[in-house]
Amino acid sequence: MREAAREAGTILFLTGDVVRDLTSGQTVRSLEVSVHGNALKLKKTIEKLGGKVWGEDEESRSLYLCFPGTVRVDVISTHSIEYPKPGKRVVHPGSIHDDLRRRDFTVNAMAISLNEGSFGLLMDPLNGAADIETRTLRLVSNYGFLEEPALLIRATRYLALLGWEMDHKTLARYENAKGEGVIEYLSTQARKQELEQIGHEEDGLKVLRALEAEGWMKVLYPAWIEAKADEEKLTALHTLAAELLAEGVRADISAAQMHLLTAKLTSKEVAALKKLMLRPGFVEEWSSLDALAAKFAKVLLSKENATPSAAYKLFYELRSRSGTLAWLYQQGRGGQGAVQSVSEGLARGSPAHSARPDAGDAHYARAACVPGDG
View 1 (tube, rainbow, N blue to C red):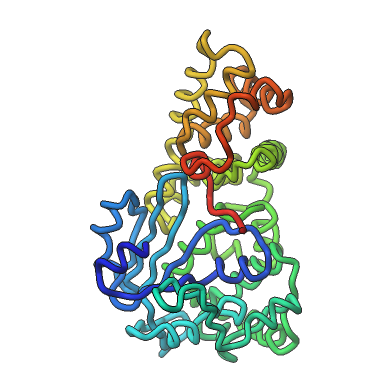
View 2 (cartoon, rainbow, N blue to C red):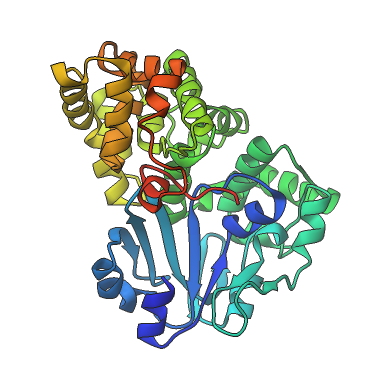
C-alpha cells in the first residue's frame, strides 16, 4: 500500500479498528488504510501489486481489497460527513483530521502514520487511548446514534466482542435513540456493512446472539437468528482455528463461519442474504467453499499423502489461501478422512514438524493468514 501511495503521490494512514486493536492488544483481523485524495485511483496499481478488488463504494471513494493470504484491506479516502436527515449522509473530501472527527467512537478515532518522516506516529485527537485504557465506548459526536443509526448496531457488536462498557452519557443516548426508533432510518449501505461484518468477527455467533437480543436482526435480516446457525459445527471450526493458531497459522475463517452461521436458513433465504453483502468478492469466496473443500480433500486422500506427516507437510507446502480455507470448511462441517489425516499430523507433532517450514518464512507467514496482533 505504501508503494501504491508513493506512486500516486499521496499520503496514507492506518485507521479504524486495527489501530484500536493494536493499542489494546486485541487480535487484528483486517486492515483499514485511509489516503488523502481519491482511493479509487489506486485501483489499477493495487491490482498490479497482487491485490484483488472485492468491492468498491463510489460515494465514499473506498476500495474493499483482499491480498494473498486472505488479508482483507479497506482503502478509504479521507473525508468528512454531514447528516441532513437521520441515516442520510453526505460525504465531503477532507483531511485525516476531518476523517478522525467523523468516526463513531473515540477508540476508533485514532490513526498511525505510514508516511516517510512520520512513520509510526500515533494521532489521537479525541483521547481514544485513554478510553481503551478504561475499556470504555464513548461517542465522538453527541448526535452519533441519531444521525447514523448503524452506530446502535455497532455499539452492540463491540460490547459483545470486547466486553467493554459505554460511558454513562453514551449509554443514555443509546437508550434514547433506541426508544425513539431511529433504527428505521438505517441506510442500505450501512445494512450491508453490518450484515457482512457478522461473518468476519472472531465469534460471529456471539455477535448474532447479541444483535438478536437487542432487536437489531429484525431490521438487518429477520430470518437470520441464532437458531439458524449450526452451533456444534461452529464450535468445531473455532477449535480447529485455535489449533492452527497454536501452530503459528492465523487462518481467516470468515467464509466458513458465515456458511455455518446460516446453515439452517433455506437456500432461498441464503441467496437473498448474499445479495445484501457489502463485498461481492466475499460472497464469491463463501459460495465457492464446497468446490474448494472437495478439491483439497481429493488431494489429501491421494495415496502419496496417506500418512499424517505427509498430509501435514502438504498442508504447509500448498501455502495458499484456498488450501487452508477448504480444509477449515471441510473440518467445520464435519468432514472426515482427508482432514483427519492433517488433524492427526497436528496432534502427533513430531513427524510433521520436521517438514514444517520455518515460521519466519515470508510465504508461510502469508499462507491463509490475516495479520497478527504484533
